[in-house]
Amino acid sequence: MTSLVLTWPHFDPVAIHIGPLSIKWYGIMYALAFLAGYLILQRRVTREPWAGKGWVPDDVGTLIFDTVVGVIAGGRLGYVLFYKPTYYAAHPLDIVKLWDGGMSFHGGAIGVMLALWWFARRYKRRWLEVTDLLVPLVPIGLGLGRIGNFINGELWGRAADPNLPWAMIFPQAGPTPRHPSQLYEMLLEGVVLYVLLWLYQRRRPFQGAVSAAFLIGYGVFRFTVEHFREPDDYLGFLSLGLSMGQWLCVPMILGGAGLWLWCRHRARTSPADDPSDPVEPGDPTDTADEAAEVTATDAEPATDGEATTEAESTT
Figure 1 (cartoon, helix red, strand yellow):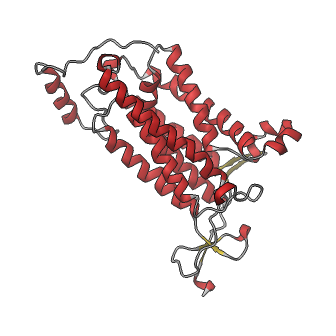
Figure 2: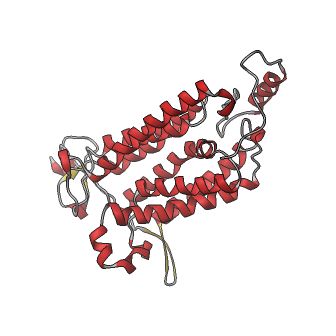
Figure 3: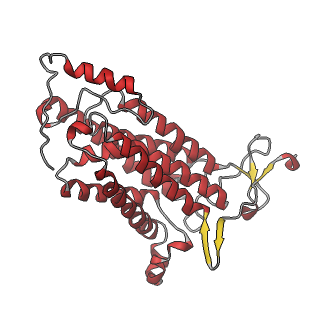
């Protein structure tokens, strides 16, 4: 029966060799994610409501740069503190060895939040306005990152029933058929979360709602997939039989739910202080017809409760 089980393709993690320089697929995935984010944001800020809030394409380069710094610094420090604090306390110089691998999404998320706070402070924008602009694009990077994990043959899943059609043997983990958990994460945290966030933002939610939905959605999907993913061998299972990844998702889910409730309360009690535009941001595939409809809608007289202010208060 095991002869019918899939075997992980022996991918070379190095995509390009240029003399002593090696460019790995995982790094290419990161580069593609940031490039895709840059191109989509360039178009997105020219549409409502972002154009009406003063966003221009020139802002995108700085925003992406700050995001890159937050991802790399936060992701690395998160891995050091959450997963191997004892090792790096004894080998502090290894912290800067990014080429040896070791990044934490939860640390990267904290790094990005801080980077976006700094961006909002410099450009005198609301922090949640900036996060709402960016977070619908984050699943692109998550999905590409998991593809990079699969190519590297790392972060494999737990043992699976050999009769499972997609059970796969990862030679690095022995002869036992396993769940290809990297692909589960790519589908849930990448494709499904991307679609859900874009659909949700079309519902014209209050400011901060999309950011909160991302925290909840990622936390739930990651917590779920961790049931199929082999925990790190140097950590194993923690309290209540949960992995480190699952425990890190708990405050993420609770924080997202708390943020959503707080933002909803704020929008209801202080609508003038929480400008959520009646025009919903379009996705990258919005057409010119949709833009024309928005223009026509804006031209209609505003009824009570529909008028919105052009001025934005600063953070």
